[in-house]
Length: 90
Image (tube, rainbow, N blue to C red; front, side, top):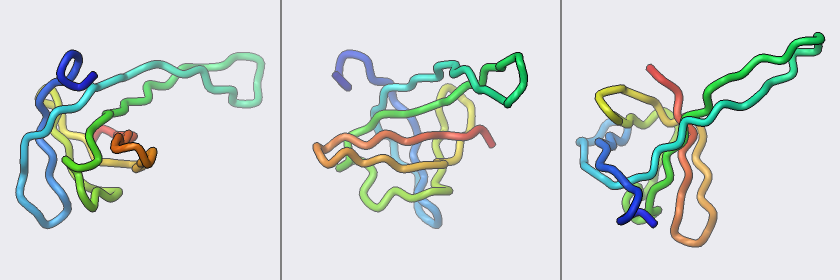
């Protein structure tokens, strides 16, 4: 999956050095209900990576993807060797 659809991104752990890793980027829109009669959409950028490429990844680590800097907002390790990172633009 990563070899077919992945792209190279720069990952920088807090206080560490940047390394290049491969991940699959998804920036889907999700409808959000705000309690009124009109919902609105938010982008939810996510990066799927090999868990072994980001050992010790934590919230606040940096990702540079397509020249855009992001911070890791949520780490979701699925226990099968794949980790999904919810990102927020800096």
